[in-house]
Length: 84
Image 1 (tube, rainbow, N blue to C red):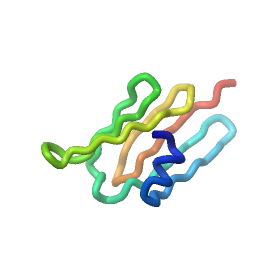
Image 2: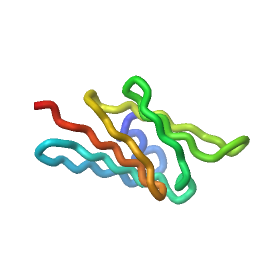
Image 3: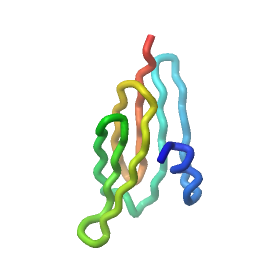
Image 4: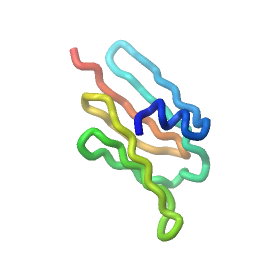
């Protein structure tokens, strides 16, 4: 899934902020994923929510480059440094 698909799948709010030296993508995944875990593996952000039978996983393809990905209060934030 890419960022556009994430936004369109169920009306989630996804915004991109472009600065002079980096790009920030923020996606509000909702309060039900407030305690999600996120890892980056080979250009893919893997977001895991819940546990046991309630566990679900979203895989998001990331743009090329070094990405820093984290979750806080149900908001997924992806920071990418622009290559000069």
